[in-house]
Image (tube, helix red, strand yellow):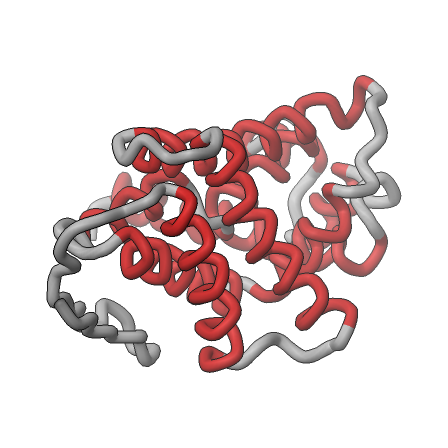
Length: 228
């Protein structure tokens, strides 16, 4: 292995450690109570060296968001897997993918869902608030464009926002308030009800395709087939 490759791998490993330890500290102490110095100490770096990886705490938060959250690109992939199926089936597949991300990143999900609601409008958190907003906005806009093609009775963006807001609220109530993440079956039941409401608003008509999707992860996946 060449020296440049070894250094590159070491740097990548250190970068992962920074995000992992920062998330642990944020979860334990809260965002405001955790300093760059605290994070540097946790990964045995000088504070100056830490700034070579991330120029601010906001940048670290943004990197954790990118690493752990369900993004617009993942939504597009889920929709593509169900191309030709009914809107309800497409939305259920999106909800399934969303569930997998939430489940695999429970610590990050719990932290961000609780911390996002407490962020103040001061200068120190402006970048973080913007990143949260951009991430959620990109996801909503991508789904809104998909819904707009169906000429729904309601505003496509409001319908898209309702879809993700409803799923997020359900996860919060189950995983954070009730202290027990929803099972796949319970999540699917809830997601199906939301998907059907949005599909009804879009007033789909005509034939519904038969559809089945092969699992893409080690986790079980929902596979549904509808009747003509």
